[in-house]
Length: 443
Image (cartoon, helix red, strand yellow):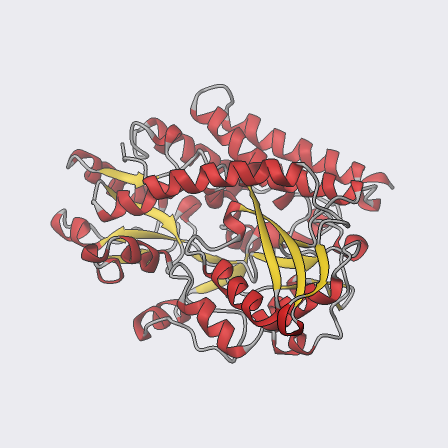
């Protein structure tokens, strides 16, 4: 439906090539050191392993790394893997002692299903910058009150971004229930436009409606997250979860995601929205800035507005206090140099460069840096009811995120039914909990 963006294709090819380098091994002996160079600068190379979505598409982190190299002589070798491979790959590399010097990983790290950074990574609690992090972000990179990582993006909140002109032309109102949402989608489809750009090939995007709507779970039972972590109940006792699976299946079969959604890539979402071939997509408010950066004539910040995802009649926006963070491999030969890089990234002027150079985000989790939210956006956010998303609150959800994405694809092709998807998610939680020897499951 949408032509591939050449730049992104090249980027994906580069990522694949870099993955091969990471698989070759870049662990405790990976940082190269040939002493001191000119002007006393160090000739050290730090390896930095990440998944594709762990680094901004704009390349701002790589630009900051070049400035750091110019200042210190310390080079950063970025080794990027596809999203779907990274979680398993980094665990294997850590277990074998061959992980990169710096590791990008998803947060929060305190969940039982997360990477065990307290075992594998350097304790950074004594670093001066830790006290400047927003409290929720600091908590997301901490285990037992010890800080192990540095993180930058502000709280993530996903919405349906919609084209105001298309809605106005068709006399459509912003939907607040699923039935209203379906009606809007049908009218857009009748007009010849694809209602929703859904990207399934990346594996993560189609999962957002399931677990960003945890406010529904908490409305039914304010203690549900705690009960799930204690294994006192299971996901089949949450009516809204199966309801949303049914609704997703219904919308896909009705054609609201378009004809080619099973081959859609998130890299093409900007083009789909800018060319108005699709009327809506799930994204953060900052995604409008990313669209406008690539398609300045479209004026995305003016043309696109947002509403809360109404799956299951949800009207609570999910908040993820932090998305990913950088950690230092404790087996690295260059821990001090890696700490020096983190200190460099945490300088106020470099935090500002990051925010300015990352169009898809509107705020950092560093209170000293003013957000990019307009007064209208801030008023919109302030008006909403908010709750923490499921994946930051319930064990053994985030760790199977990409697998759930594949389950949803199987549902869309008819290989699984919504109830099968729910049962599979529950079975994985049990398997992962037992592997972790979680006392709530093994008692």
